[in-house]
Image (cartoon, rainbow, N blue to C red; front, side, top):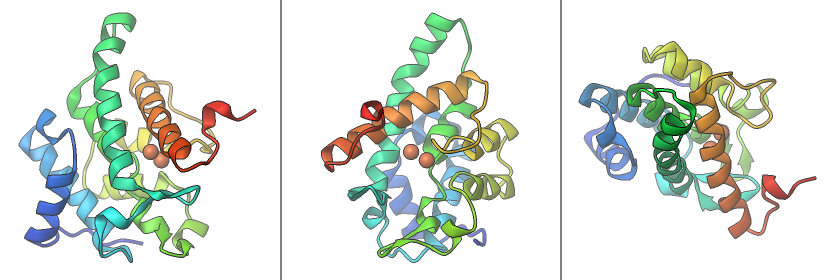
Length: 187
Ligand SMILES: [Fe+2]
Ligand SMILES: [Fe+2]
């Protein structure tokens, strides 16, 4: 499925240069986030990080772009959720959830469509296993495991709520610009 790797300096730099939000977490957490993405990328069939598609429904939209859109949308929602809901969102939990929610996607797709792994394991669950192997907090693991729109259920936490709307806000943009039907317009 995957083997944990810290990757090459080149791979780590490419991931660091791409990911939004690393400046909002501790250096240790940022490093672990980079290792998670490097592992998924290095164990995938993809040579070029920015060639990985967001989804089969929007093959021309880069996953890399979607991930940063989700992180930035989530960061915009965080202060609103805290002010309006009276909750506290720990950036050490919320940011890894946003940045890593789709970490398994490189492993689940190929230039020809779904990978074999994608026919055996659900999106989100593979990422959660990777994050568990890397020692991430249980709240991050659970939220990533259950975030997919077709997951059997979603977590009952403010973090899962914020991720859902940040993800769908960004996903619907990718679908719209690719001429696919966004979730908000489905019957
Ligand atoms: Fe996802
Ligand atoms: Fe997503």
